[in-house]
Image (cartoon, rainbow, N blue to C red; front, side):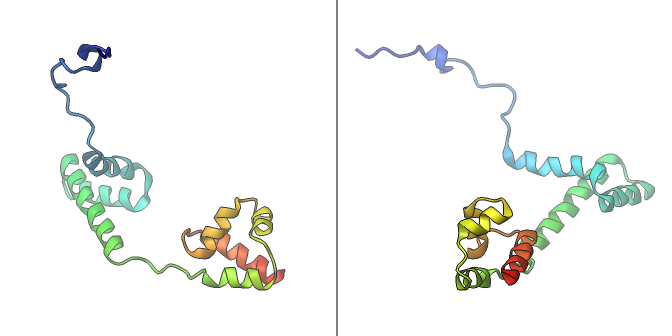
Length: 137
């Protein structure tokens, strides 16, 4: 006969909680409009403009959510051009520089350099510095 914890310890006989559990979708929808009015100047200008037009705080939050959704949709449907880092590995290998040596120079893990060279990581500042360093080496 197996002995295990009683169902009451596992919460099996307790009723469902009256407070709904956290839902990631809803939180992601609500959080940006709470943080953005205080942070980004364009958002503060938008809120000031809508307040001047006589909209209530509730309407402004609704409109702000819609504006954020439009902005995200635009970014998803029209992605920005990503710089091509494919030449970095060939240049490094032509100069007989190891990934470890390059990583030590920039004080990062070798995996960071490798992922940058393969196009799996985007870091424009590091890529610019890396390209300059490879040209000087």
